[in-house]
Length: 178
Image 1 (cartoon, one colour):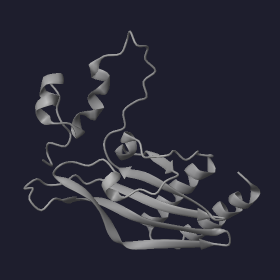
Image 2 (cartoon, helix red, strand yellow):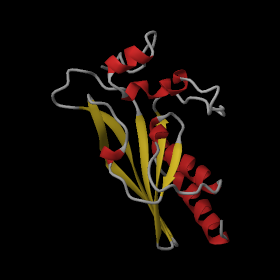
Image 3 (tube, one colour):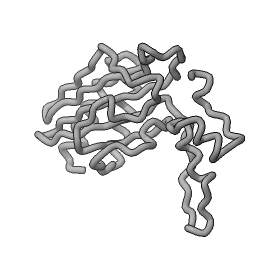
Image 4 (cartoon, one colour):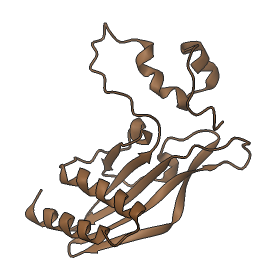
């Protein structure tokens, strides 16, 4: 990173101490990832709702673009925080699941943070999953070793009938919310 951006990160870390603990934690996690030279992607990846995942994205995205369930959607919290720095600003807010009106199901207690980062006129975004689906290990598998079991992490986003066909013994971590 250029020297200016490192200085901006230091300034934002100092500002974070004046935010509530919840917002301070989220901002510090994003800054830590930004300091590690994360390269922004074009779009969100499916694992953006896995706990601990942090993604930097070049293009703006809406809450409806984030994976959810047919029983709930992502809802933006009313409170927005803006951290001003000499070279730009960071605006961020919390996203949490909200039940669809017609669904009798309860929702999971997930928590995402969306950041809009504007530094020196360059705007990009960050999504940090503070609480979400369990993070699956990265697999480095050859084609010969690959099996349907390696895709089981997608089950919470699939039709339950298809999941039952593919993985009969699968226990959905989201069923307690469905």
